[in-house]
Amino acid sequence: MGLRGCQPHRRERAVADLEAMIGRRELWGHRLPGERELAGELGISRGTLQRALELLEARGLVLRRHGSGTFAAGRDEVQRAGARQAGRLAILAAAHCRQARGWTYYGDMLKGALRGCRRHGVQAEVLALEEVWLPFDRLRAPSEVEGPGPGPAWPRLKDSAGFVVVERDDPALVRRILRLRRGPVAMLDSTFRDLPVIGVVDGSFEGARRAVLHLLHLGHRRIAYFAPGEAPEAPHEKTQGYQAALAEAAVACDPQLVFHARDEAAGEQAAAAVARLLALADPPTALFAGTDRRALAAVRALEARGRRVGADFAVIGFGDSAWRSGESDRLSSVRIHTRQMGEAAVQAVLAAGRAPTARTVIVADRLILRQSTCRREHCGRARRAAGAPASREA
Image 1 (cartoon, one colour):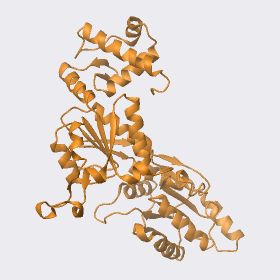
Image 2 (cartoon, helix red, strand yellow; image 1 turned 30 degrees about the vertical axis):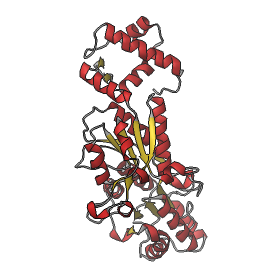
Image 3 (cartoon, rainbow, N blue to C red; image 1 turned 90 degrees about the vertical axis):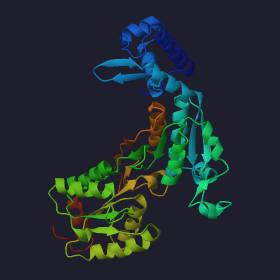
Image 4 (cartoon, rainbow, N blue to C red; image 1 turned 90 degrees about the horizontal axis):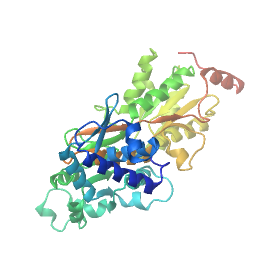
C-alpha cells in the first residue's frame, strides 16, 4: 500500500504516537499487538496505521514478517536508525542527469530517488559527481595518485548517513565512500559482487524472456536478436533471457540470427545485419533487440528493404525509452521502471543497517505491446499480398 492516500500531517502524527506507545510499553524487540488493537489504542483508522507502519519499516524501526506479525526493532537497531535520520542522504548524479529536460533514463532514476526521500521524510542533497570525484586529468597533482580522486565537494559526503550513486559504475569511487564508514551505499543500475553495496537493477533476464516468449506465442520460430553491448565471455542477462525463452519452447538458438553491434555504429551496422538476415535461406520473421535504440535502427533498416513492421515483421525493443522520449509511439518494448528503481534505492538505504552489506534489489520490468508486433501467419499473407515469396516455416 502506498503512502499517497494519507495526509502527511496525519501520517507523521500517527508515526510519532506509535513510536511513543512502543517506548511506553517497552515493546522494542518484541511483537506488536494486532492492527485492530493498535488502531483502537491510537484512535486512528487501520489504513492510517498501515501507512505509519510502512514508514517506520522504511526507517528500520519495525519489521513485518508475513505470517508472524509486526515486530518492533531492538534498541540497537533503533539507535542506528536514529543516527541515520539525524543525517541526510547524499545522492550523487552527473550533470546531465540533473539538468536534463524531459525524460531521460538516469534523470528519471534521480527523480525517483528524490521522490523516495520526500515520501520517507528524509533530507537529501544532490551532489554533482563531477565535483565529488574528479577524473584523472583534473587532479592538481596527478603524479601523486593513481587514477581519479576526490574533488572539491568530497568533504560534504562526511555529513551524510547514506548514499545513492546514479549511473557511475566506478569501484574506486565506491571503495572510497565505504571507507568513510558513514552508512550504506546503493548503486542505481549497477552493482559490484566483491563490494558491500546495495545494487538496484531492473529485471533484464525476466523482461527479455517474456518478450521472446510473447513472440513465440505469436507463432514466430525464427527470432533474430540484436544484443546489447556485452563481452562474449560474459553474456548479458538479456541474452540469457533470450536463450532461456527459446529453450522453453524447444527452439534451437541459431547463431546466424544473433547480431552484436557497437553502440556508436548501431544504425550503420543494423542495416548490414538486416540485409544479411533477410538473405538467409530461412530468414527471421521477428526480432528482439536489447535496447530501443537498436530496435529502431532495425525497424528503419527493415522498412528500407520493404518490410512492414507490425504487418509482415515483428519487433520488440527494451527499455521503452523510444516511447517515453517521444521518438516512437509504435514500438513494443520492455519497460524499465526507472523512477521506481530510484525510490527502491532510497528505501533500501533507509532499511539497511549502519554496517554495509551486499544486497541486490531487482525492480521487475513490464512488457508493453504496441503496433510493431504481429502474428507469424500474418507475415506470410502480407508478404504474398505484396508479391514477395514467403519464407519457410521453421
